[in-house]
Amino acid sequence: MADPTKSPPLNRPSVIAAHELIKPHIHYTPVLTNTTLNDLASTPQSATALADTPWAGQTPANPKLRFYFKCENLQKVGAFKVRGAFHALKRLMAEEGWEEGGGREKGVVTHSSGNHAQALALAARTMGIPAYIVMPTISTPTKIAATKGYGATVIFSGSTSTEREAVVKDVIKDTGARLIPPYDHPDIMLGQGTLGIELQEQAEKIIAAEKGKDKGLDAIIAPCGGGGMLSGTALSCEGTGIYAFGAEPEFQGGDDCKRGLEQGKRIETVKTLTIADGLRTPVGAYPWMVIHDRKLVRQMFSVTEEQIKAALKLVLERMKIVVEPSAVVGLATALYNEDFRRIVESEGGELGWDLGIVVSGGNTSVEAISKMFAVSDKVAERQEGVVSLDGKKTVENVAG
Image (cartoon, rainbow, N blue to C red):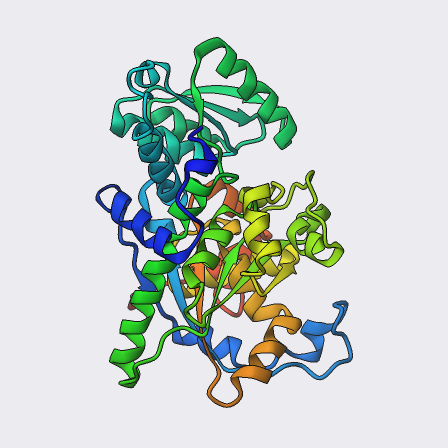
């Protein structure tokens, strides 16, 4: 990889510079709003919804929230990861002696469960460089196929970061390829943070158009796996007055960043099979410095598998966009985590908060979504409009 000590300083101006460098290679993804989800988030949860949660029996929060969804599911390769991949690769290519030392022929290597894999494969193909991608055998078939489709050589490994990194070392030994890590490098973090710059600009324009106010976001909430995108987003917020929050799945200890902050020490190993498969990794050392040491992320929150599924269903049905489970942990937090909702209620008051939500990717499949929301044949027929309320299937001249 490029020498981290030679990377630009980790600050907002460096994120802006990274944006200028990668602009020709990325989509300026849209920011969407949704009144239905705003209304839902601005309504207190019921006592039934809070039963069997840490907030059972408590008075529910009553925040006022307006969402601004940064739709990185519409980014190239279907995820934000292409930002960091292009930035890191272009920085590597600019390194003194890289080309003369045969860097272009030796190629690049990384390990990833899918989104960074596709991102680096595309970036390398664009630049005419070989790419070797180490993927865990548990990676989804669609992500494996897409990575191969971008021309990369795929090598399989075990599921943990330790197992993946061991295979990467073998590839480097055999090929001389340079490592482009999925998240634990300043160049990656700065590249991912460019989505935060765009989101801030886009939301400010929407707010001005709708309310006639010269006002930006109050906060941004982003998913956290390895922490590259969360830390980059936090850097993009530095000095703006915009808070950065992080969200994780709690299943099987997937909320390592949240637990690490509580313990004051980074947790280096995670083994979770959360449905948010893009977040099954521990926070890296460089992101941890931004999140913990510099305290640029105000707080971390975690959500359950059922809350992730509920948020995913809302996005599919109400926003009409296809996203992966990892992409909705921020929305799930805003809708269902009472600790977060109480912060908004307390600090936002009657005016509430304008909240940016990073929708990190859309790399899933019809089969995966179908299984996630599988119901009985009887229920399915009713949902499809095949069976009427009285259970009959008689249909004639029904208007659309």
